[in-house]
Amino acid sequence: PGETVLQELAKRTGEPGYYGRYEAAKLLKELGRAERIDRFNYAVQELEGRSDCADRLAAVRELRALGDPRAIPHLEKAMAGGMMDWFRQMCLRSETKAAIVELQDRKNRPKT
Image (tube, rainbow, N blue to C red; front, side, top):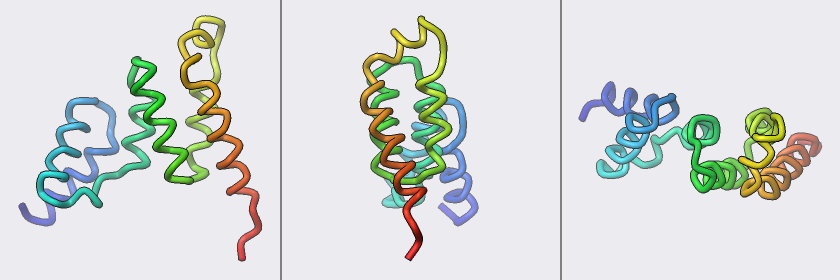
């Protein structure tokens, strides 16, 4: 495929809509262009758009591994909510808290 198609697939990997996002990432991998996947926004969409805790936990782990402080508000949002949300998020609470601490530390670290 041409550059325009690759750009559109890459863009789609970071947008809402699980199946389109997943298929775009799968195609890029099959084409040997996995580096074009928008890993940050893919993980954000997984965290905010999926309901299964295991899927959301995988997204938290990906955001933590990427080490991008832009993830902090998304992680904080995942931790917010009422009593029902607290129970719904139990499986990812400790990992999310640890990710927030690490990313805040990275954000506050002096630039050298």
